[in-house]
Image (cartoon, rainbow over all chains, first blue to last red; front, side):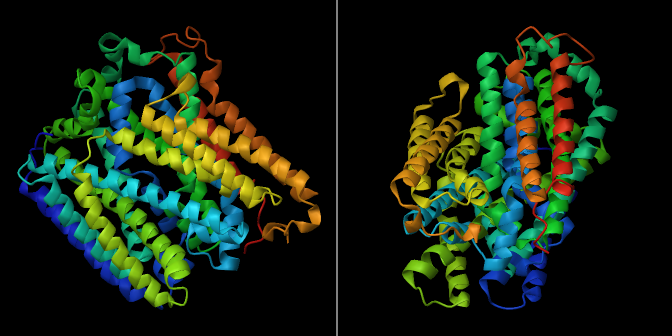
Length: 493
Length: 71
C-alpha cells in the first residue's frame, strides 16, 4: 500500500484519538461498581439505547466491512449487493432468539454464551464443544482485525513503520483500556467509533458528489469499463447469493461478543429499540461502502485478488487531493477505521477472555476461584493470546474476505443451539452434538478444499447437514427414550 | 392463544423475509436486466427489496416481538 499524503494535523488527530481511548478506559475503570464478572464483562448489565446500538453496529462493522466489503464489491460487482441483505438479515436473526435469551440472561445471570448452553442443555460435551468453537472463531476474528491494522499502519506511513511494530503499539493501547474498564470502556469506545464512522461515510459520499465528478458519471462509466460486473447473478450466482445471506445473516447474529451485548442490555425495551435502529443502519453504511467499491471499478481498473482490498485507500488518496475539507474528512475516516479495527478486536478479545475465565478456568481448572480471580486470569489470558496473534498476523497470507468467511463456517454450526434451543423446548443435547460435529466436518473440510457445490458456501452446506442430522436424531431420540426418562427442559418450566 | 398466534406471525415473517432475501433465485439471467438510470433495473429492485426488509425488521423489533415479559 502506498503512503497517503497526510498533513501533520492528521497524525496529531489520530494521536489524540488514541490518547482519548486510554482516558475513556480510565473513566470506565472509575465507573466499576465491584469486582464481579458481570460488572467487568457486561458493564453491570446497564447498557442504554444509544451505546448498545452503536456498540452492536461497531461490532458488526469491522475492518472487514470497510476494506473487505469495498474490495469484494470491486471484485465481483453488483452481485455483492447480497451483503446488504445479509446485514439486515443479521438483525432479523437476532429477533428470533435475542428476546428470550435476554430474559433468561437476567434471570440466570449469564456471563458468556456458553452459560446459556449449559443452562439449556446440561451436557458437558456440548458445552466444551461450543466453547472450543467460540475460541477458534474469536481467535480468527482478532487475527483478521490485526491483519488489517498492519496493512493500515504500513499504508499510512508508506512502509516506514513496519506492520508488526504498528500492530504491537495499537494492541498495547487496546489492551490497556479494555483491561482497565472491561465492557464499559469497550462499549464507550465502540459508540464513539460508530458515530465517527457514520459521519465519515456521509461526508465522503458528499465529497465524491461535490469534488470528484459525482456518483452518477462514475456509475455511468461502469457499463463501458466492466459490463460483466453489472449483470444479475445466474443460477449458480443466485445460490451463492442466498448462501451468503444465510452464512452472514445467521452466523453474525451468534457472534459471542454480540450475544454478550444482548446480555448487557439495560432492558428488553432498550434491546428492541437498538435492534430497530440496527436494521436501518445498513441502508446507509453498507450502501455507501459498496458504492465506493463500484465507483472504484471505473476509477481504478485492473486491480486483482487481494490488491482490490486496497481500493478504499486509493479513494481516500483521491479525496485528500480535493483540499482541506477532504483532508479533514479522510482524517476523520482514518480515525474511525482505526477505531473500528481496535473496537472489534477488543470486543472479541474481551469475549475470549470471559470464555477462558468463566467457562474453562472457573469451571474446570479452579472451580472454587472467586469472580475477582477469574477476571484477573481472564485479563492475563487476553494479553498472552493477543501477543501470540500479533505475531501470527504478520505471517499469514490470506485475503481479507477469506479470513472473514472462515469464522462464519464455524459460527454457523453452533447457531442451531441458540435458534432452535430457544424456540423448541423439546430439543435435547445429543441431537445437537451430532449435528454440530457433522456440520463442522462438512464445513471445515469443504473450506480447506475450496469446495462450493452448486455455489453453496461450505458453512451453509454444513448448516443444512447439521439441521438435518438434528431433526433425524431428535426424532430417533424421542422414539427410543421413554418420555418419563427425559429430563424436563428448563425452557418448558 | 394470543401468544401462539404471535409466534405464528413471527415465523410467517421469517418465511416472507426468506423469500425476499432469496429474490435472485427467481431472476432469469435476461429478465430485470434492462438498463435504467445509472444501473440495471435488477439493482434497483434489489435495493427496494432491502428497504422493504429493513422496514419489516424494524416492525418486528418494535411491534412484532412476542416476548414482553422481561421487564
